[in-house]
Length: 261
Image 1 (cartoon, rainbow, N blue to C red):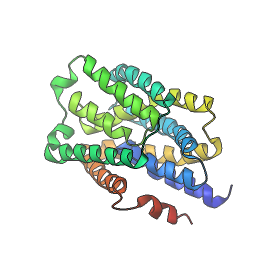
Image 2: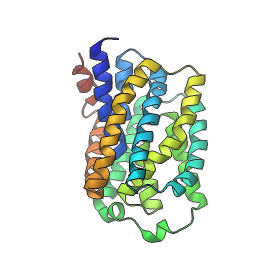
Image 3: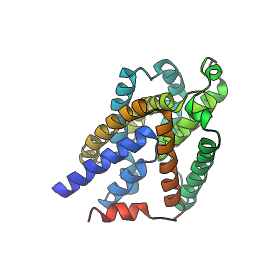
Image 4: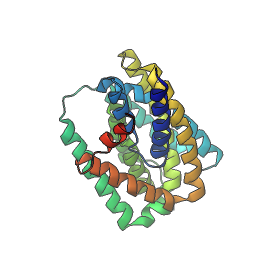
């Protein structure tokens, strides 16, 4: 493996780890890079799970140290998410990729409207929701989120954030901490599925994960020290860019990959 490839894997990993910890959607960079380097889409999807596991491990530990991680509720919500993720990782379906991407783009834009239109819902949280016991509806929501995360993972952070902020009452900083913890809980199970099906390139995955760890650690510090409003604007910018990519308005994948040539 050349130093150019190693540098590309680590540097892109820093960016992905930062984006995924503060918001979500960075996985599209990882999968694009792996495919550019010659991996089939299925193996690129599986290889990415190594970085997901390690970056969420580091960021969860950092959030826990800063006392913004609610591990008790995270474990409870993690149960349906883990179950859903195992099923999602096992599913093999035929789907129109372009239509699928555009659907994600629409959902992201709808979420951004909520973030912009009623920012207080995202910044301060709701104490009455936090004190409420978990409901069957919440378990169902996180089961579906797990199903999606196990299947493709791209953008799963947005759905977890929506569930935690709008349905469970967390502010964005604490929701971000809980988001990465929930992903950490289901990541090992999905990795096992991809290992069993021989869909992981360990060399690319481990090198890429080095950058992810660095990016995740930096982002976890920024999220707490700069506050929920900072996280909110990061999410808005990333949603706009990702949606533009999904709808073909811009080609961020090609621009990013051209810089590696």
